[in-house]
Image (cartoon, rainbow, N blue to C red; front, top):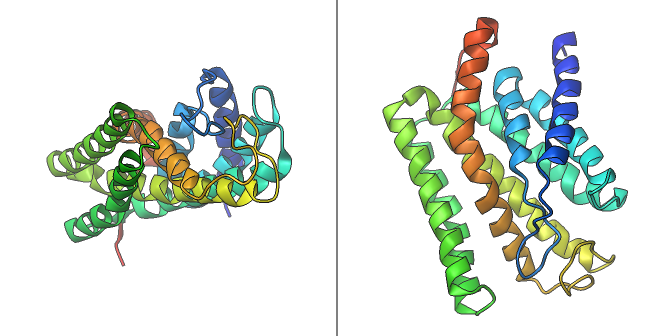
Length: 247
């Protein structure tokens, strides 16, 4: 691994921690709590695209650990190491890996079908009166709207198609780890910031955490990512990488 990449992992981790601290608004997911509103995801996303999946993944993993440990984070190392760290590593590694490839429209269509599971989860939560209709429709609107933005941007500006697709897939995987990971953790240990389900959270709580994480973070990835990455590449042309052919 190049010395530059190791250095950029440290920079990514530090910026992720600092931006996460500065943008923390004390907002957590409705109904079940625990997961914070986290716009700072744009930081490792940019690093994953500019410097590769290992830089984005490891930088995000280290950064989220420090962000969890310092106030106002939850301060529970085991929770961070089992949920926050692996979810961030997987999500941003995938974003960087897929984002560097020349994704075709058939892959986008397949991803749309796979991520349609999130829509089904939202419908389930609304139908079961676990989420109020207005909140459920808001989440649904955000999901559909952001996926539409990703497709439109990819069509109008083909050079961003891979990034937009990678953002959706990477965040979906990371959100799934968070949702199901928190549920599994609660079966053995108490959760912080929980709204009544500190222990033995019901299984459907994992859907709530997954949907909340995806719906509140995807807007920052699909809208802020392209202009920031473009500005970085314009300022430092050496950061431009040639896309690899998709497998």
